[in-house]
Image 1 (tube, one colour):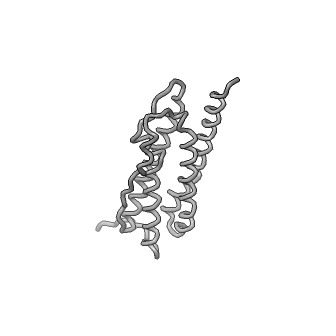
Image 2 (cartoon, rainbow, N blue to C red):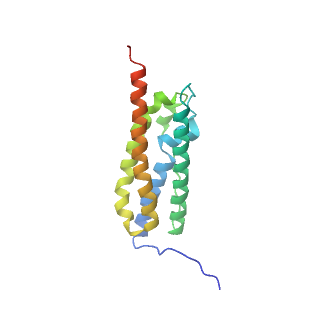
Image 3 (cartoon, rainbow, N blue to C red):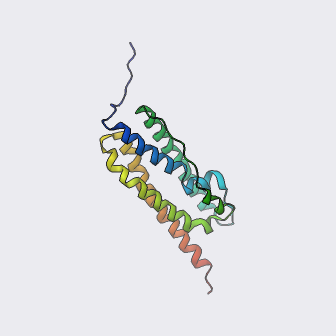
Length: 159
């Protein structure tokens, strides 16, 4: 006999799958993900910490996306592909210090899109776990990018 451990598919799974696909699209098509995986910001001297932070954020987003994809499939759904907005291409080949205010703004927007999904996922522990990790992390990343924005602004001001 083979026993397979499964999580019960909740009532309203279709709605949950739709919402999880919206979050998945946000994760995989975020400005942060674009900069880390597609654009390749210019490596300016002194930006090593910013690059490490960006790479870590992209790796954590990739893990979250993988978890979301697996969860959607376990709910008998189909993970949907998203696409990056064409406007992101105007931010190619820039330094991360220059991009810091844009990174902060986009992470705030990311966090705001996930927050409403928390309530919808309350009935499903796996979904709630993924979303409760994304939301505060994205808020923290926005704060960190804002700090780097402020330090970049002050370093460019005349004495």
